[in-house]
Image 1 (cartoon, each protein chain N blue to C red):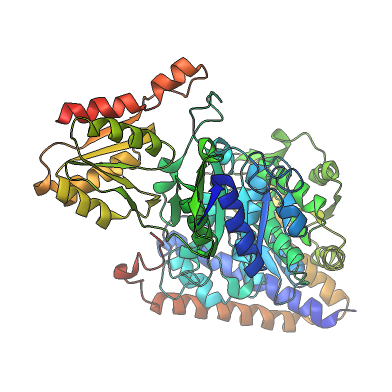
Image 2: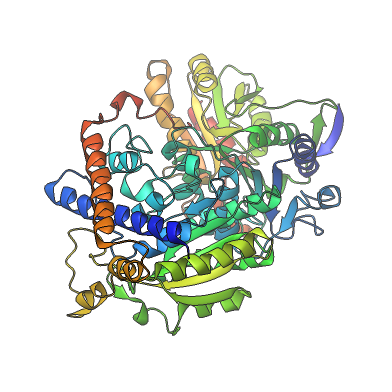
Length: 317
Length: 322
C-alpha cells in the first residue's frame, strides 16, 4: 500500500532534516545572519500534510517555516540563498528565514508574528470560495498561536462561510520558553475548534502516514465545500526555540525521550518491516538528500548579495 | 453636474467600480442589508448579494483575511465601522499587507482599500473620534487619502479601488451628509495630487479633510483684513504632492498647516519639515502648525471644541504673522 508515496514522504522528511541540520551548522559558523528557528523533529507534519496539495493550492507558514516551504516544493537552493540573505533567495534577501513567501508555490509567507498568518490563510480560502475555484489552503501554526485573537477570529470566520481551509496546529509543547500547559487549560488544543463549530482532532504528529491520511480527509472535505477542519498534531522540536537560545526551560530527559520518537527512524523501521525499502536503499536516500542540501549550500555561497542600489525597488511610496 | 452627498458619492464610486471589476468585494460590520453604520453601502447588497459580506466583530480577523484575499487575486474593500478600531486590525495591515509586495519583489500586489469613518467634532468621545493618518503615513508601502468634498470622495475612491496597493481611505464622519457638485460622467481624482482650493498671494494654508471647512471660513474673515490666502487641500497625505506645496510656498513665502489631529510626528510635522528642507530660502516667516491639543479627545462639546482646531484659532494665528 502506498509504496511510492511512502518513499516520497521519507525522502521529503530526510530533505528537511538535512537542510535543518546543515543550517544549524552554518548558523554556528556565522554564515547565516539574524536568527533561525529549526523544524528538526517535526518533519512528519509538513511532509505528510503538503503531500496532499495540488499545485494551485496555498499554504501559510510560521517563523519555524523551512520545513513547510521545502515540503511545498521549495527549491532548496533558493531557500538556502534566502537564509544567507543572497540575491537568488526566494525574496532576494529581503525576507530571510522568517519571511520566505512566494506565490509561485502558493506560499502566503512564513511569518515572524505568532498567529499572524492565520487570517491570511483564511483570506486565501475566502478568495478561493469567492472565485469558486477548487483551491484549498493549509494553515500551519504552533500551539501558542491558539492563544492569539487572530486564531479565534479566523476560525470563526472560516466556519461561518464554510471556507476551504485546513488548520494544522503543530503542538511542540512550547511557545518560545513557556510550556503550553501553563498557557492553556485545554487538555487537547483541538477542543478549541469546537467553540466555532469546527471539527477538531488531535493526532500523533510524528506519524507521517497518520498525518497524511487525516489531512487528506480534511482537504477532500474542504475541496468539496464542506468547510474547515482543525488538526492538532502533537510533536516536539529537538532544538531550542531559536539557535543560540539558552535551552533552560525544558525538563531533563525530555528532548532525549522525544528523540526516541523520531518521526524519521520510526518511519524507516515501518518501511523496512513492510518490505517497501531495504536498509541500503534508505541509505541511498540519505545520501541523495544530503547531496541536494550540500549543493544548495554551494549555491547559496556562490550567489551574490543583493545590490544595495535596488533596496527601494519594490517599495510603493 | 449634479448635486450629491459625500456618502452617496462614495457609494456611487464603489457601485460603478463593482460593475466593471468582478474581483471587488466588501467586508465589514453591518454593511449588507443594514447599509453600513453611516449608510455608505446602502443599496449595494441588493445589487451584489454575493459580494458584500457582514462579518463578525473581528477587525483583525477580517482585515487579515482581506489581505490574504488581495494576495490571491481579489480586490477587497474593508469597512471598519469606526476608524479608531483600525488599531485592532493594524498588525495585519502593517506587518502583513504592507510588507508583502516588497517581500514578493513586486510580483504580487495587495490591492486593498481600508475605508475608515473617522474624525471628531461630534462628541463621540475618545474611542470614536480619532483619525490615524499620522500612523499610516509612517509605513512604507501604504497610501493615505482623506477627501474633503463629494467630488474628491468619488474620484479618490475610484482611484483607491483601482490602485494595486493598500490605500487607507479616511472618510470624515462630519462630511457624510455634506453636499457638492460632481460631473454626471465618469471621472477620477488621482492619488497623490493636492488641490489648490483658492489661489492667493500672501500666505499658503495647507490642510485636508473636514477641518478645511474651518480654513475656508477663516480665510473669508481674513479677506476683510486684505489678507489674500492660498488654500491647498492635500487630499492625499501619503504620497505627498510636494510639488504643489513647494510651488505655492515659494510664491507666498509663508506656510501655515491646519490639521484636526495631534501635532507630534504628524502630517503637519512632515509637511513642515519638507518645506524647511525644500523652500528654506523662500520663507520669510517660520512655518506655523495649528493642530489638536495633545489630549485624548474629550466628550463634552465644550472640551472637545477646545481641543480641536477652530476657525478662530486659524484667524488668530494668521493675524499674528501679519
